Amino acid sequence: MTNIMINKSLKIAIASGKGGTGKTTIAVNLAKSLGENVQLLDCDVEEPNSHIFLHPVISQVEDVNVSIPDVDLSKCTFCGKCQEICQFNAIVVIKNNVLVFPELCHSCAGCWLVCPENCIAQKERVVGVTEEGGNSDVKFVDGRLDIGEVMSPPIIRAVKDRTANSMIVIIDAPPGTSCPVIEAVRGSDFVILVTEPTPFGLHDLVLAVEVVRALGISFGVVINRSDIGDNKVREYCDSENIQILLEIPNDRKIAEAYSRGKIIIDIYPEYRKRFLDLYEKIESMVTV
Ligand code: SF4
Ligand code: SF4
Image (cartoon, rainbow, N blue to C red; front, side, top):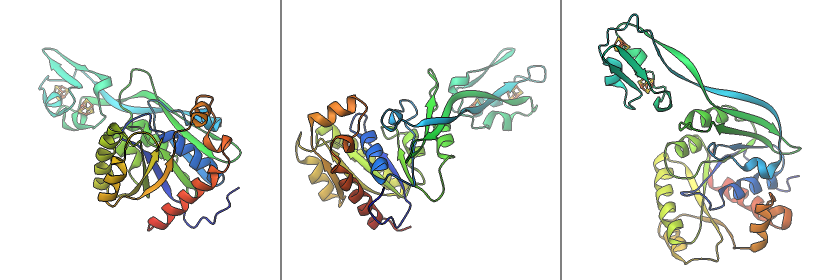
């Protein structure tokens, strides 16, 4: 049960410039601390692991399809226009054939729109699944990209299509600063950037800040393992006017609990208040 007055049902994305900084830890602890009227969307679709900590009962699994070209060679004049427009080398015209490389196709529709003979149809290809369910408190959706597939944005969009109305939504974004992260955090009210006080942490934080600023979304920083490394992350945040929302010290018990599928508030219940304070701080920073 939540002990704070929730004034706004925010969409909060949890991101980090690199993997292994504790992004999922923050996402699941925040979701479980809020405890009700909360939905967690695990958009880290190449390696979703929030379920390990939330133990949701999955009630619905759905395929995620993308459209790829299906060429009718009997009508094709091998003019090469489809190959010319494709920015991803996913369709190649050779002497008397048109080859399609499904894994490279971004489903941009360029080839079937440009074909003067109208001989490119669309066919569906499964690239992964979404899984939906929950436990007694937190509602849950994650996405899984099939092994060997590289296009995670369609799965991320399918997960976000299941965003609940009138609930607090916590989005566990993929690590990094490329297209999948942008897809995951787009439309959020706030982004929590999770980092560590190390040179690598700072390097990736600077890149992540650039991305979130370009998207025009309010954000703040959580420093995990805050007592390792140096003070450069704090100095950077200070110089850039970025609020440090929470610091979590390096703690062997937390690390051990994580490896057993437990979360911080399971072993240190007093942390729940710190995560609720985090939500309150974010509420005060967001105008919606
Ligand atoms: S654009 Fe159409 S007609 Fe031209 S090569 Fe491609 S499939 Fe064939
Ligand atoms: S849909 Fe777009 S990405 Fe896919 S083959 Fe056609 S032009 Fe290339």
